[in-house]
Image (cartoon, one colour):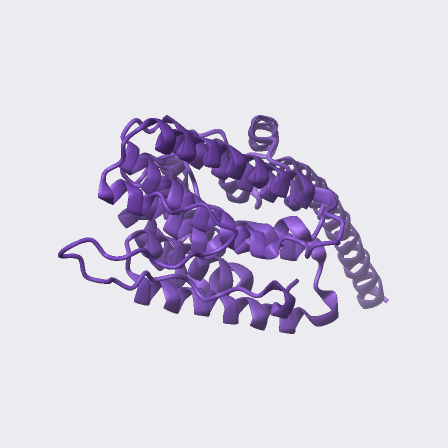
Length: 370
């Protein structure tokens, strides 16, 4: 009988302990869900480009949940909020801390910190550090979402190599990005979301204009030419979050390029810059709806902006031609007014023909992603 009562007592204590553990687990789950919800709200602000608000949301999260398993993820979001506000040095320093603190136990966060550092270095004009960060992140690709490892990083590498006139590497990484994106899209199949695709295209096509200058105008335009199609594709998807950001990025980029071109005092340099700008617009307009189709959505303002910039560029170039006596070189460079490409003028004495490296021709009607 004593044995029976002892067994009952042990069983009762065990059940009470189990009930207590279950209660604690339930409380932990409720707390974790609350933390995840708060983090999601901060990420939503970040994705919408409301960087000052997202900064406040991430700081509030860290104050409220200092022991959260999401703490380092929130710091990563805070660094990206700094980046969005142009506070690149702060973002780089925070990303470095995150990388060192998470490499062993949370390598997926460490890899993202490296990846986002590359955007900051690019904006700071340090392409070598941007390349190093991208390649290091690529080496941790197994810890990254496949769209970043297989598509976004190769696209960023392609743009940087294109700016450096390293056509072979630029083309290799562009092809890798295309194949990687196709693979991820195929694997997602019916679960592919428009918002996910628009975000991926946006990240693949984003290039900072922070360090754009008259000295690097041509190389910047060359890099932009290799990846601007991704921003156009993001815009065309009409996603409520990423399409307006893609449109804004495109318009800001073209206005920055035009502003430099317009303010250039040296005529020959201005004409050369105009040629780069026209080439970029020519490529973008390959994605314009065919004649007769109505242009709607985010495309409407973007292509209207291109039309306006082209018109103003024509006036600048041809007013200069009428009022200034041009050298033979300037006359040759001034042959820019066209709907598409024109025949090359005769070479100047002593000149040799040089091939102009261009990215693969894009035919929107044959692109499976459009």
